[in-house]
Image: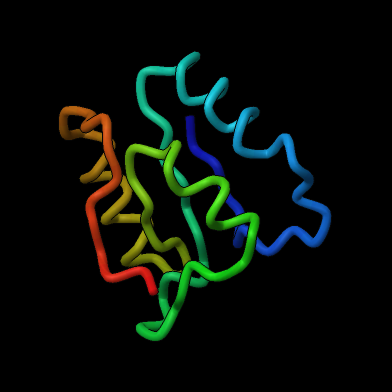
Length: 89
């Protein structure tokens, strides 16, 4: 499943983490494509981002043609079942 979102939903709601967990369990791989990852100083501070991040297998930028090429390479590789640990502050 490809999820395209910046994660900045103002009305993320309390059930977002549970819904993300359900979605993650129902698919082979959950890839979150976030246009804000193009910024080196991106921080996982918004509640929506923090609720979603533990339930994705890959957290990738999507903001230009190169990022789409990188996505094509990523989905051709075996699916991990965890997010690569980056310094999300």
